[in-house]
Length: 391
Image (cartoon, rainbow, N blue to C red; front, top):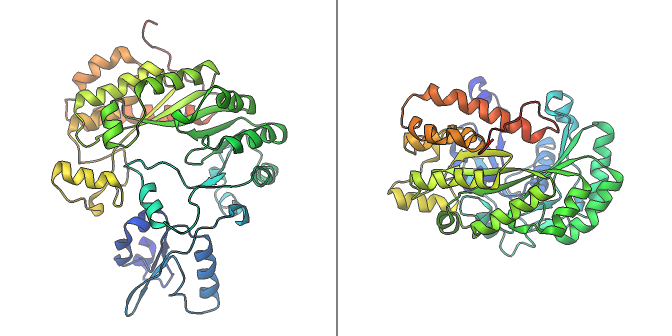
């Protein structure tokens, strides 16, 4: 869009994904010709055909199209029930021109849709968008998944596989069939995303036996009340501690996703998030500042709490930066990794975050984030954070 605007090019510009789906006003921006609402495989194929054949494309389902007479807003089509019918993603177009994207790791997705309705996520709105449009949560067959993985491993030898489903561990029947096949035919270590409460002893053992080396999951807040009432994640602290202990027992390392700046959150409650991460001994802490995206439930909560109207045009390009929160909260987010991995430093960090000196926090943040991201995604990290309580 920026290139088009600067060069006065006639290139057709389309945007898709959650942002235009729930903030469709983006189509009013000068560089944008069209947006795709919801899932876009079929809409994009039809659009490409129409453009190539110089046919009318203004009535394609899922598309909003800018025309001389205004914006044509088409309804979304029913969801694709059989997602095995969708072709495998063409990775060649990226890896051929950008080989650095490979990183000795391949990512795959076994499902569509998430069964949960967290207030800070677009998923609840997506459920409403597709009401009566077919099953929302859909899974590929294990054989179809294995076929895609085998095909790509042959072309792009890799050291680790990453399953990027919103929640890889909810479908027990799928896991029981897929994981033994994966172990037999693929045999590579893998990472997956989970909801911690979806795990039990049998499931964790099944994951471990198949080669699971990392599980990434959202803790979000260490304060039970905020987590339940604001974030809409009704998970008691006792369950979090129990399930984290289960992962430790089976030798599966884990990353916790956390956020600060939750509406109504006091600094002392933010400290509880650090304390919970220390308690469960998370291997790779990760923390962002809340961004109340349009179309999410928490955006409405945020506006009510702070008596303001959220303007997406004022958002920063990173959820690690924000002018919405007090300096102490923003600074604590930057020191989060260090406060969790080195809890002896926490009393000092509490005093340090009161200072308004950005460089004082930017450098530790970059170092901590770089370590946490690298260590969580590689099999062996040469740098270990081990200075913990009593050691």
